[in-house]
Length: 249
Image (cartoon, rainbow, N blue to C red):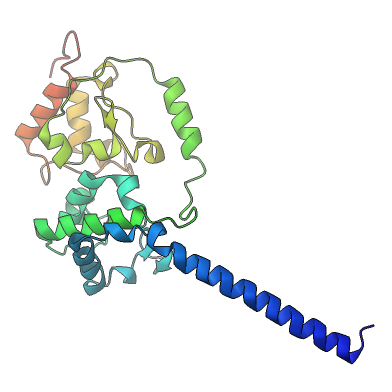
């Protein structure tokens, strides 16, 4: 048993010690903030993007850095997950890519607005949050399976057609050895060898109306909202440029 004097000394000593540790850790955290947040990379575009985020109350549906609502996806690492091209197309018209399957408001952002929003998201994704948000637990396994099971194929020529970048095809699929940031997460296959698994007509039908062929698929409806019929043929010409004999249309 401690005497009153010993208990008082223990209490006061413990309070001083742990208060000192608290203030030291707080000071150390604040000292590291500029480096962890990449403060030197906060450009005018990043500031403008944050202003757009706040003015449109994006946090009313989404979370950022773990803060906000939980109605819509967490966006801290959205540039890493989706890629700039995908985000640009989606933010222009969310409903066009996913008719009847997205509740996101169409804000009619200008090209400058889109540049600023993506710059803000890109900066957010590079902030050191000590491992938050964590990588999906199956990412490494899925990437490993994809790498081990994929048959060697000849890569398609680079660069890819502009429409495939504009339509964000390379945001989900890898093409010519590039892109496909979201592929491992949603099972989007590489497109270099697609000519060996689907005929040109089958692929045309799939791109034109993926929901009809596979209801619930993550593949968005691109034709004709994002990709015209002529551009679709351009995409098919490119994807089948590796085929020794192109399947008949």
